[in-house]
Length: 308
Image 1 (cartoon, helix red, strand yellow):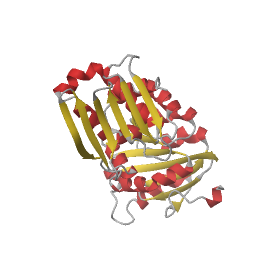
Image 2 (cartoon, helix red, strand yellow):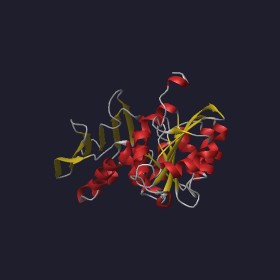
Image 3 (cartoon, rainbow, N blue to C red):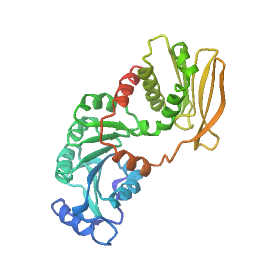
């Protein structure tokens, strides 16, 4: 796809030169009376990645802009003077050359207010510089292994999280709830096999890393990650010791998880829990409410990197 044939990230926005962005944002933010005025802005979100992945996130960004957040979309490319469009409290820089990224973020963020970076991919060499300008980074790369490795050393001064981690929240909560049952706690040391099936191996690695770090597993636990092409990210998780078993399974609708347990004399045949809203807009809004460092996520990533 050529640059000219790509749909703009803000197709209804007004094209402006870089020097006029601040003035255009001020005027555009008041144009229809529905958006918060500039003095009411509470944060900046910077979305970075390939053009096609930013186009997918544009609706979510427009939604957060309505609640008083300045949104900056930057698609990577080779242009030192990219096309710039402004709409409301959102600005898009299309096909920006990577070595201009840090300067653009530093110039456009609201420096006295929190800044979150939503990293949807791009040149990994530029990641550290952008992360150092942020209070929080939400990772969302298609192939996260390299970014996970780069992100962990930054966690001391920039809070790090990941969309995969957010989408695993209900799966993690359900597994943790099993261990509220006395029979399961008593049997915890006997579990020696974890099977995870799904379409996204990185989500499976992250979940396995979380369990491994939470339960302090040794190398005696066999971890079997089974990739099922075309299936949802996670469709089944089973923790067992051959006789006893904890199982989480995606429901037929794809919108709920069925939990069952067979441990000693305790049997829970089935409990069904909603997965909640998994859309981009809901998740990014929830992530923007979090400011604190997530040590459980950091430990999970560190453990996940050692799981094949």
